[in-house]
Structures are given as C-alpha cells and as structure tokens.
Length: 501
Image (spheres, rainbow, N blue to C red):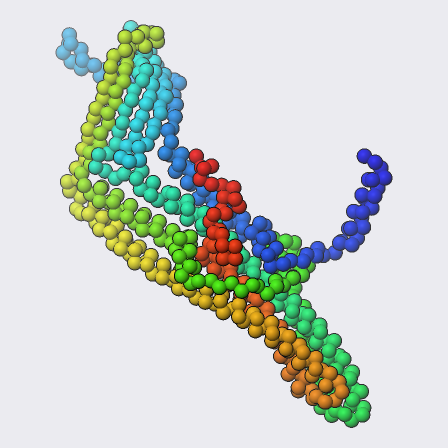
C-alpha cells in the first residue's frame, strides 16, 4: 500500500478524533428512532428470542409428523445368574448356574398417523446369543423385516388435537412478535416526544433568559426616565432570575430525557441526541368497522383466546376418554429365523404374525375420573366466558383508539395555527412594550401563551403518533400503505412455514 495514502489516512483519523473526541452526536427523526428501537433495543432482542422459542416449538411439532428412523444397539451384555430348571429324573426343580453373552441391534422406522392417532412401524432385528456351560453354543435370531401398527381404539387421540393447536400457536407467536414490535414503536415514540418536549422547554428557557435580560436592561433605561415604576423594574429583575433557574432545571430534564432515549435504543449513555420533529401528517380517516375487522383477524389476543378454548376442549375430550374403558391393538406381520450361524439366520425364513388386543376397564375409582371430567367441563365454560370479556375489551380499545386518532388529526391543525397566532401576538406585544405602550403583565401573559402553544403542538403531535402506532399494534395493519403487517412477516424476519421441516 502507498505510504502517502497511509499517512493521509492516519492524519484524517486523528483530525476526526479531535473533532468528535467529545460526546457522540446524533440527529434522529421519529421514523429513524423507531427503526433503531426495532433493531438494537433490549426489548427487540427479547421479543425476537421469544418468537424463536415458538418457532422451534412449531418445528418440533412438524418434525413429529414425519417418519423417524431409530437405531437401537446393545453391543454387549454379559449375564451370570442362577436359573430354575426341572430335573425329570429326580422329579424336582433345581437351580443351575447360567452364563450368557448377548448382542443385538434394531433399525426402526415410525410414522405417526394423525387421523386415527396410531403409529405405523417398520423394523429389522438381529440378535446374537452365546451360552456358556457344559454345552457352549451360539444362536442368531433375525427379523429381516416386520411391518406393524398400534393404536388406542377408543382412547384419547393426542395427534388430532396437536394438528388443531400447534399451527394456531405458531401463528399466534408470529403475530405476537409483530404486536410487540409495534408496542416498541409506541414506547420509542413516547421517549422521542419526551425528549422533544424537554428540548422545547430548554430552548424556550434559553430564549426566555435572553428575553428577560433584554427586558430588564430596557426597564432600567425606562426607569431612569420614570417611564416605569420601581416595582415593575423589580418584577423584570425577578423574571430574569427565575428564567436562569428555569434554564438550569430544563437542562437537567433535557439530560434525563436524552439519557432515557439513549438507554432504550441501547446507545452509549453520553450520546448527545438532537431531534427533528415530524412534519404535520396527512389527513387519514380510519373506519372503525374496518379496524375492528382487522383486529379480529390479526390481533394475537384473539388467537390466544382461541388457543385457550381449544386447550380447554382438549382437556374435556381427554378426561372423557380416560373415564371410559379403553382398548389397544397392536398388529404386525414379518419374517424371522433362528440359526447357529448368521448366514442361515436369513435362510428359509418363517412368517411371523403378532396380533394383540388389550382392554382397560375402570371399575372402582371412587369418582376420580368423573371428577376430572367435570372439572375440565367447568374450566371450558370459564374459559369461554373469559374469552368473550377479553374480546369486548380489545374491541372497545380499538374503537376508542380510532376515535382518538381521528380527533387528533384536527387538533394538530388547530395547535399549529395557535402557535403561529401566539408567536405573532407575542412579537407585537414585545414591540409595544419596548416603546412603552404595553405593561409587564400583558408581556408576561403573551409570552406564557406563546410557550404554551408550542407545548400544546408537541403534545398534539405526540398524541397523534401514539394513536397511530397503537392502531397498528391492535390491527397489525398499516393504514397509510394499506398493507397488512402479517403479509410482510416472512420478508422482515426471513422465516416462513416453507422453511419449517
């Protein structure tokens, strides 16, 4: 690399270090603040990991619907023990020492059958046994192939309920992530406008210090010519002192608000942040009926309630089936053979058939199973009632938020007009005071009105954007673009159902 280039590069770095060696400076818009919150805040990290936990849970469920391949091995097993045997000559049972060595393996494929709740299996076995004693001999036992099926005939089908619940849980987890992201937008907006208000208060306090100092000097000159009284002059001096105290308090509040926003965005605590306020938003009328429709379709609360009802119904079905008698069937067909050597163990195979039917009948349990079933039914009724109440609460929240949003749009226009009028009125009152045509009370009142108008404008902007992001959160819909946030999920987070095994 060219030495001159290296030299210029080092010099440039040193110059930048000198310029920016103090606090890091950053100018943020509301949009940029929200983007940074979604990317780098601690809340964003937590919410994304909560989603990933649900994602891997869904992948586990999907993997359980696919064939599984299992290899079971017993490489070595040695046994030395006494066994009971019948001695025909003496007509008695005797205990004899027995030694054996065993090794075996099984390769098995299983496939769950969701519709009936059973399991198909296909396996192959090979076992080796060597006996030690008066007569040492070997045995190989093989099952080249065996196909079987087992299930409960009347029992609880867990697979059926998993097919209903697990996809719903994953859909809820996805929308919970989107919901939490919009909630972060709300929180970021709150921090943003808290700092914006603190900056306005600080700027007003600085302006007020300069203004009160100027007015006090002017008052001194006018007092010399007896244009104002001593009391008015002292009032002007008091205003100047109070303005400096207000400035100090405003500076402290500004630092706190700046630190809060920097901490939320996971920035260095010494980062100096300046804000650029968003412009007046365009008028956008949101229909209450449309918002309610979108909330019912997308809000994760509704999905969670559906999940809770399904899980309660699952418990009712499970306890009902467990209170009845159950029958289980296990059937298999295959081939097997036994021989002294491994080659012959795969010759002249004999057909192997196994069919078993087992029945479990509860006779006396003193009402335990019936009690569990009744508890499950009562819990289902409670869950359904609670779900209706929560649905009404969410719908009420949507209605109120949409109403607030539509009102805030009009309030912003009024607040903006009030700022212009208050600034014009204060400027004229100040000029009149300078020429002696306005008293101190009129000037102070005009200044307070101007500052209050600026505060009200910031508050109106804050309330508008808070309502906007709250509607996005409740409906998971971007009304400005008309695009559902759920449709953009895979694009934003790079995980979709097709990637799930």
